Image 1: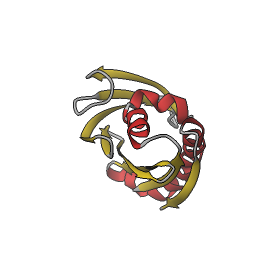
Image 2: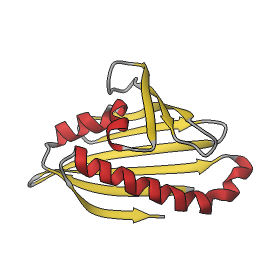
Image 3: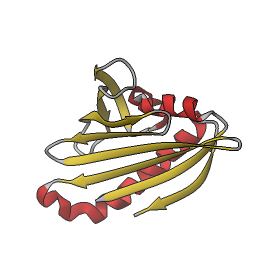
Length: 151
């Protein structure tokens, strides 16, 4: 399993930060690894939202169908995508602070079957991808990085 966690302090209110982050169609605005997003169920963010997210892959574009597992505004959303190659679990939490909000983005990638042997290599690449996404989050949330944890 590869994991990337980042926290961004934003002047935006918790409700505003949550609304932006919970709408997965916004991925293309801050994650350079995402080349396209199409909502296939629901209307915007919500408990029934399902998004097809196309990411840059080693062998070309890879489409992942993200289904919302937890939707608890304005504090958390969990979205999961499973394919024959991998499982991606994205957990976003938002808490208020004195100046706005702190957004935590926690992403886990688990390769399926024998591909799991490549997890150490995936972890290195995933950290680089996560660092680029953090830069994008800082920009769209008009914020600054608080902490970062890589494993």
